[in-house]
Length: 575
Image (cartoon, rainbow, N blue to C red; front, side):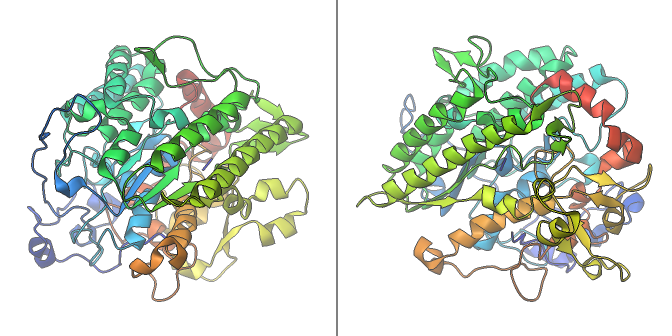
């Protein structure tokens, strides 16, 4: 698994005058559900200045992966490659707001590449993530793609499958991003493994998307995982459906556009999710010989077992990736995240000598099997770190900076600590503490976040703002799928990256570091976390604060997760 200074927006409200001044086509809207949520139009923040790119037309033949593109897309200061953890996924879904608060967006804000004023991103922008359909909509009108564990409906799964099929089809084949940009800078896709960065072109995902969507739109819920992956990949790689960009892989786009800096987070889908989410051993078979993952002689998944996928396949792909990146003109720095350990995500709970999947209750691994997976992940990290040093020592090419995500997560590995030490020691050394005053709460014990599955107090009820902090009994660093990070968790990952990017030896002296606009001093971890859960701040940002799963199910259902397990089993390894 693969989270800092969330340069979250200022608490100052948005005036209509500023909205007009910044070029917005409309003033901040009064959302339909604002009254119920306790917000008003002054709380609405904007994430786009209304500017639209000119239609992209290749200046020459685009039968190859190297063709002329408009200068506005060339030599960006920052690009990103990655999987769900850079895509911004939480609770098995992505939407416009989660994309805007992905780790690469955090990093771009810290570098001053995304301007903020009065809580709005309507100033200059030099870094663009995918603008998912319903961009800038209120929470109740925001379309989420995937399996939203925070808003599961307890009836009519067939109808839900058809509805998701329509949404995914619209995104992949009908909808254009509001800004009309042909390329995005954050090329991270939920489900990407190391081979996906180069093995498939955008057109391959388009073909597979049509096939899987045909099944999903017939109400076959089991097709949701495939339909989400392929449709999301196509939208990220080719948002304007250009025939020229259809010819490009994610890596091709980096080579074509020649950024100055590249941040990369990849490898979790080489088996780590299967171990941590589905409780599969390292000898589990991973790649099928046929099906949607094979097209025109190319395959996305080229390994027999997790052991090979996270071992020899991972190493071969990373070697190829570093080889290709070392040839990119103008690329000066590559910040490469290592992978977390299978034992670190919240989903694997240690009980009586074995690790049991919290979501898949009948699946478990022995402590020895999990340790074997951890050793495999550590070996992958050592290889990537060593390879980066080797390439950095060359006279030409970018500097490769390895970022040890596993060590970052280890600082908050409460559940791992409990295997060796007492509860008191683990609380003191392996939790993320938040003073109640930061949430505007009465004096009392500090709130503690850790890497266990989220467990709330209380029963059915609306959970947002300070009520979330009151209901959190354990966990909080991971979202409801127990695998993808929460808002606070992603802030931690982003800070690890920011701390490397801003170092003078990594070119950081070129930027005036933009600390969190929501705190007067300091850039400590979690400086802005209170704004992610405090009511009355930004209505659009309530997308992350609502925690709809609790409104639907309450504590008993959240504890048992029986319905979640049933649905998750239908779609398989949904990462």
